[in-house]
Image (cartoon, rainbow, N blue to C red; front, top):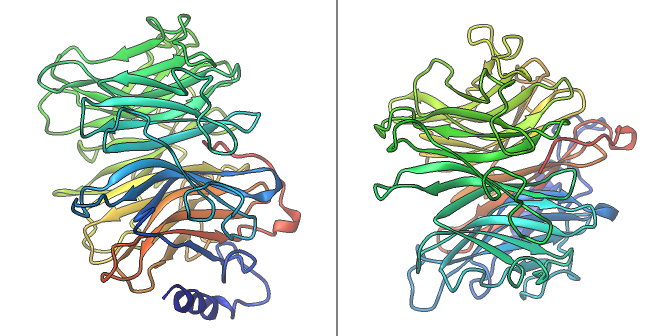
Length: 467
C-alpha cells in the first residue's frame, strides 16, 4: 500500500519544470517531496505533530502525540502519550533515534500517574539541544498540566522537577517558551470555580523546574474578568526584546458562554500587566464579525508589530481562519490586510462545507511575509492547507497556487491534516501532519512534505520567529 502511494507521489511530481517555483515539492526529500512514517497498530495507531525543529546537520525533529489502541478498548478511546519523531535531512526516518520499534520514533513514558490521555501540546529547545515540553493529562484522574524536560535524545531528564516532570493540578497547558535567561514560561488556563470557569495562566519556572519567585505571585500570573463566571485561556507566547511577554488566546467577556473574543496580553518581566500596551496591558477585541474569535498563534515582526492567527465566525456555526496584526502598542495595524477589513486578512481558502478551522502554525520570513497552516473539518475529506501572505497582508501570488498550498496526502483516502510548519535555515518549508489512506485500516501515518521557497543554494539563512 505505502509503496503504491509513494510511487504515485513520485509520478505526480516528477514532471516539475526545470526552474522550480516557490511552493513546488522538493524532489530531494522523501519520495517526490513527501515522506511517510507508517503507523503500527502495536506501537502507534497515529502520530500527530504539533511542532517542528531543524537540528544541526539538517535533521528534522517533530514533537506531538502518538495514539495507541489499548487491548479491549474501542478505537475512539486510545492511550495518548507525547512523542518525538526524527527524520534525516533527506526525509528518511532516523533509525538511530528512539527505541519504540518504529524507526525515528521516541514515545514519552507515563508522566502523570497512569492517566490515559497525556497530550503534548508545545515544545521549546534549549541552546544545548535539550527540550522542554508542556501539555495536559486527563481521563483516569483530575486534570493536570505537565512540564517535562527531555534530553536531545528524547529521554526524560530526571534532574528537572520531580524525576523530570512538574505537574500543575487543574491546569491545561498549551504553550511553552524559553526566555533569554533560560527560564521556562508556560501558559494555558486553570479552573477557578466549581462551575468550571477558568482563568488564563502564565507560569515561569527556573531551569530546575522550581517556580520563579520573581514572577507574578509565587511564579504565576493569573487573569480573569470582573465576572467570576467568565473564562479566558492562552494558546501562545512570544517575547519582546525588552523581556516583556506577549500571550494570545481568547476571553469570554460576559460569562454567558455564547462567545469569545481575541485576547492579547503583555506582561513585564516581573509578571505584571504592562500598562504601555493597549492602555493597560490587556486587549479584548474582535474583527467586527462577531464573537467566537480566538488567537491561536503569535509571531513578532522586526518592526515590533505583532502578527496573530486563529479563527473567527464566518456564518452560523462556522469558523474560518483569520490573520491580524497590531502595533507594538497594541493598536490595530490598518496598513495590514484587506482594504475592506483593515488590520485583518480572512482568506477564503477552505472548501465549501468546512465548519471549523484552526491555525496550527504561524511563521514569519525575514522579509515580513507570513506562513500559516490551517486544519479544518466538516467536509467529506480534509487536505493539508498552508498559505503565505505578503508583508502587507494579502495572499502571496508568488507562492504555490495564488498563495495557497493544498495537498491530499491521503491520495483520495480518508483524510490528511496539517499540524506544524518549519522554515529551514536555507529557506525551504517543511509541512508536517498526518494522513489516513484507507478506511479499511485504523492506521494514520505521519506525513511530511518539503517545499521550495526560493533557491536553497542562495537562501539567506536568517532565522524566523518559531517555537
